[in-house]
Image (cartoon, rainbow, N blue to C red; front, top):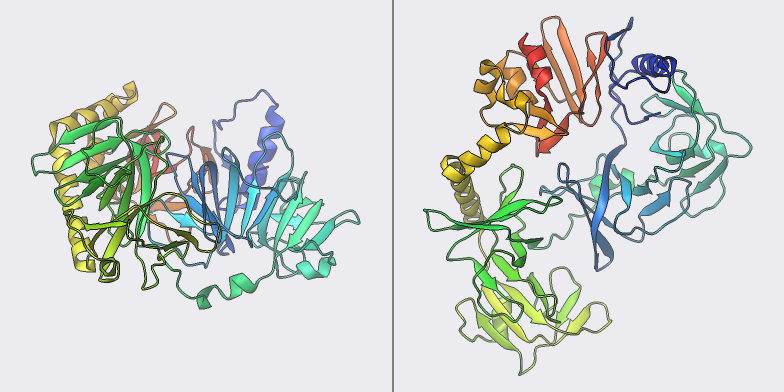
Length: 519
């Protein structure tokens, strides 16, 4: 039973499940006729947690926390863990995360987030998924009747149900009322709400959630870092060079100009070429175009060399030569070469005079923070917010020019022809969306808002945080990202491919649904 379908009413969900069971194991999943229901009640409860799912692609240990990146190219995100993060398997046992794990992360809904892409979360709870296990896990708040806040799960706590707090100390069931909890269970009834006798419940402390608004602002690193291997290089007419990284798990583009600092791992200037593995450093406060794949305008590009033992960090340092992240301290010696971006020698005080620094170093101590005697430091001026904003505007101009570039036009034509269906798009819909077409699992996907509003429908995204309500007159559709089932007035219907956030802030749906709105 999918307990994540929060935007479908319990009555509708029950009708859908009972119809599926009656059809038998070999019945197709697609619903050919809408299931009629008598009443629809819209859920207005705001969930305590935001849930995201992904597969861990990379892991990086940092001071006091671990940084994880996920591999989903349609919905990439990063997240961090620390000693307080609760990490369990689907049986409620503590585990350690590793590359390749499929995880569900749960972040407090009222927790502040950095305005960056891909988004970065600081989850309170992480569940490692295992498709071989019949167990389920739910993270939510329960009332005094042990009913979840979304009203789709009621707990019948038995004598065998283990109830503990985050420290593993046993609690009585009265401790659950009004608290956030992780519930581990196997079977649930088809009733409304579904009922289950959980195997284990972990009651969470609400201290972190209640004080979320009172937390001090996070210390944000001055640069964000993205890595990849260059797959193509293109010289543009405005003097910039565009590079593409077509990693299926993390595709992106980036541009360089005469002001971009491009160095190898020894600190020497180099020219970028196809096949180079690069680490790019962008100003953390730099505006970004909300497009997919993302496009970056890095201040620094380092060409990686796996054979080199040298480490590189791009950041800011204080008067004690400790970096902004507080995980590296520089012991500058007479052998340390310090130069500016032009290669001119400068003193170590330049690190403190409104400059960023690129530090090349080898071994470090095991202390906190780690200490090192760097081989070379390249300093370059800090930029003002106005200059960073100008860089963002330049990127926007570049993107506009890119659309008329013959290469990009040819790519758009190829993308529009991914299926025979794409070649036959209705003229009115084609006028609304232009080349804004995607392909998922062989189905043509079109932007929901562009099509719906262009056809006179109202699109409401305030009622549901994971989709939209599309309406016009007596017609109403309730769309939820990641869910194939959608509401049509007082009935249910089915997509073949679930709506998805294929670009930041833009939901795509099947072309067939666009035709439904048109007709």
